[in-house]
Length: 481
Image 1 (cartoon, rainbow, N blue to C red):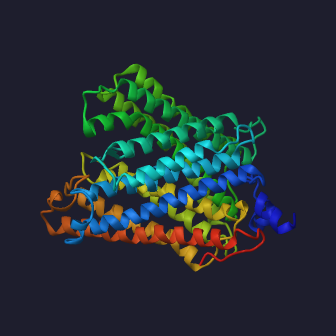
Image 2 (image 1 turned 90 degrees about the vertical axis):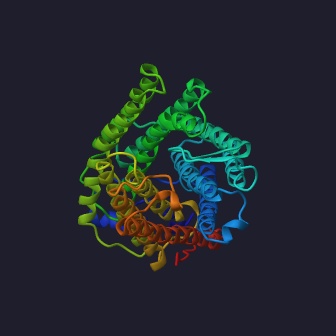
Image 3 (image 1 turned 180 degrees about the horizontal axis):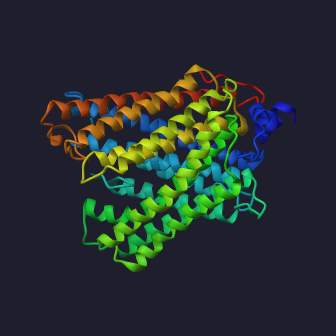
């Protein structure tokens, strides 16, 4: 193996001159093994990208579904909501699970390595996408996992859940040990392992809810209660992996991190401890009670909020004195900065929520997009370590800023409209926009959404071009623009 290939696979200091330049203490980066684990990680990445591509198609269908005349050519009288459900589940649920599968594959040992769960997840994702055109059933905008209440979508979701369950069990069985002498890589491994534990708790909560939620409940009420506990637990998974991404990206951008690995592990432990409020909520209160719902919300605010702030501050301080770096670092820095900005905006909006209006989707759009941007940055960084080319160029650097700016306009428009009481989960004339200010706010939301769609499609374009052009030669560096 030559030097270029060795550096691309293992991500050592020679591959990142900025590390040596800063003299950073803890090295918050992980090697990528050049064996079957890397091949499996590549497959999970392809699943995530295909889900994003399909999600992009559904975002176009969303626009067409609102276009007079054209909407009559689409299947179903309520195709807008049908397309929205599939778009959200592909761009959030499937994409996040795929990135988690990538990271758990890279992080884990070779124990229990198999492809069956990936096949289950792939078939499930395909059925979820096809369900929009074949017997979709009622579109239900439930929190965390929107639903098409039809047999094809439900079967696909169950297969995805089965694949995710097998993935998590393998991640736990193959989790590398983290000793008492914790370095930066060990801290990241602990965070990735903790995310697997949080996901196991979330899957337990979903199963628990399925067993105890009264069957006489129907539609949105049933699914809202069914997914509430597990959905909250899953937020810890995504937050833990996002924090891992922030530390990792800051490191490869040359940041000198003013936080010790032990303190990072302590923050991860705090978030993980809060996850175990989930089973307590099921034991202490009936799932249909307000007390049950509030316990999940309280745990997420406490554990998530306290764990995020110190790591975010350390990353910001580390970036302040970091050099600009080379062309391959520019997209990573753009993704990191955009991720932190969007997540912070979502958190601040969450503190202003009062009642049920579009401030609520503004809050979770900011947080979810913050996670998405961190994952995008990690994918950019990991591509050469997975055997592809390096991402560089103006288009690759512009993409995170464009996607982040569009989403920021989107949530500002929602907050603006929410201040006037515009209700959530409605569209068209159901929104009852009475004033010019309300119309302007929702117009800004729509403009930001369109810009964000372009930014999301650019991410897929940059990554797929690198993956397709590069696959034959590990030493080739392919431009991402």
